[in-house]
Length: 120
Image 1: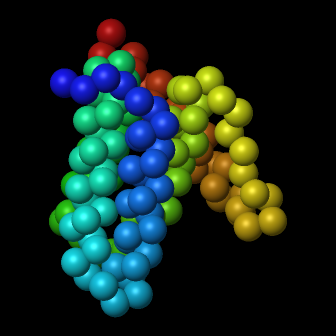
Image 2: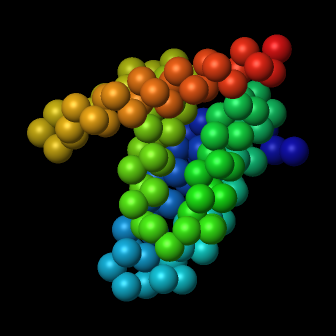
């Protein structure tokens, strides 16, 4: 298994978001490339952050088995979670973000903590 790299996790998650947006704009094969980036993000964190990998996997399966490109909304909070786990401040552009995003991030972090406790 590869060494954990949260920068790489965030890079692959961000690329998946871009590709899902392109899929929604008429490039349906980009959905599968996005799924590949999500799989890469999983493998970048599974050693040290298996719960994060599990959460990313769940999103990947949604992407693979859904025609709904709105799943990008759930990838951004995972970037925030990876940033938090990297002990870096999570910054949001308040001009573009809605209060729902902050709520989603809190829900994602709560889900992470719940799943992490189940692993212990």
